[in-house]
Image (cartoon, rainbow, N blue to C red; front, side, top):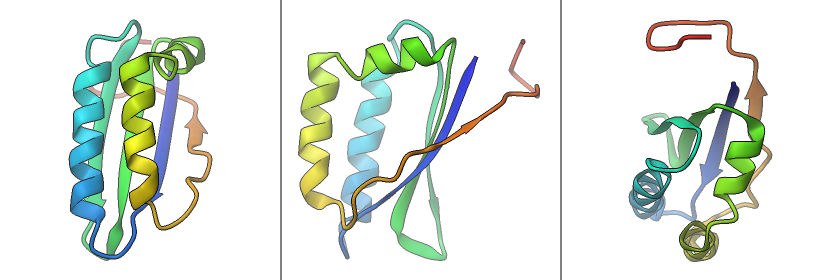
Amino acid sequence: MYLLHGKLTAKDGKADRLADMLLDASKLVSTAIGCRLYVIGKDENDLNSVYVTEIWDSKEDHDNSLKVESVRELIARVKPILGAQPTKGQELEILGGSGITI
């Protein structure tokens, strides 16, 4: 399995809009092959950032999801409200946990 955890930083005052767009993304990938989890979160101490945690059956499944036209369109709509270029998310090894069968 493939676990990716990332942070996107919005321009001042745009974090709620960014979160809404990422929640839309979660709906788009909910039926994607290999998507197990796509969760959006915020940190009350970091008002401009939105966090995304994803679990996929494989990195290939994740990469393929980025090729879907509706996902690409959503990414294009997100870019103008970002305050900084997205950094590469953390790729983490899944050790186990509730809800995960390895």
